[in-house]
Length: 402
Image (cartoon, rainbow, N blue to C red; front, side):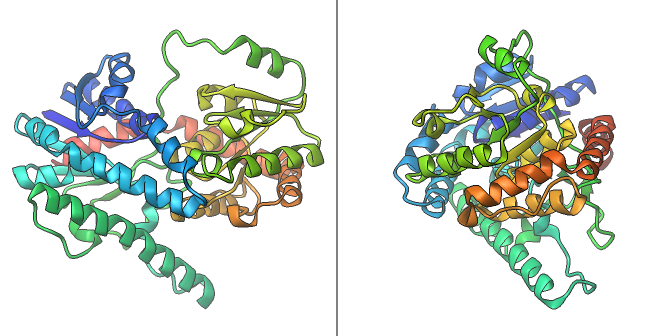
């Protein structure tokens, strides 16, 4: 089959689709991964056919600029959402051209490709990173928890349907009336481990949990010497991997200082990974080190636990590494993944970003570092996830369903 996979967003948004494209190629399909021109080198380095779509912008830098002007994570989140959906709209003509030469469209979680597949009359497969949008009422839960889950489901579906109907209007495709109208009647893939997202027997059969899609670290990549030296100089550290939505706002430096204070209270070493401009504005103590955007798969293997916001990709990387996680969520899907980690017993109760304090984070860090039962459970979960092959499962289902 000739398959096109359009997606937009950051490096972390693009990487799972590179993994899927590689496995589809190994199965004999002709695959084109279409995304921002800035990621062309990343895609080509994995020997995947690349097609540029939309404007040539560095999404991560533009997102950082939006967040730097925002007074809170909420206003920053809204600004980033508007920006990212505008990029999808601007990519419409490019995606539609690619659809004319395709037999199947894989609609990414960014929604890129959905309106174009509908307009071109092509079969499509969805990738869904928000399984809580599929959640069904659980009568066994207490009333308050049932109400919270229902509100979460409503919020996630609203966030998905409204913007995507706007995109469909921009592309000349008809609107859908609800969430299910956006889903594929053939196959909707949830790239998460069944250990984390248990399939619901009440779901429609086209909704399939297949396992995570992990991309190996880049060929020829070598760890920075300063990071290696820090890691070798003491006990395994905490990996701090907070995202731009938290650290990129006007309060980012304040949040970074809270994290440093918590590390001091807990008496632990730490490596700060990823977007760490807020930490760069502070004088880091000797027990903390800035690593920059090193691969999480490499860093987490050498860490004792991880602090993150509960984003899909970082949640998956931490679980795969087999280490406990302290989650500081600030958005709907992050609360969901934080709850999954806690219910699995591989992390303490999440600390909502609005309630973050040095003392609360320090207590959670001590628990994650010293609770032997939690650490053993995280190691077992990691071993099982590393044995899964989610991308191979996905390809098999695509071939069987379409």
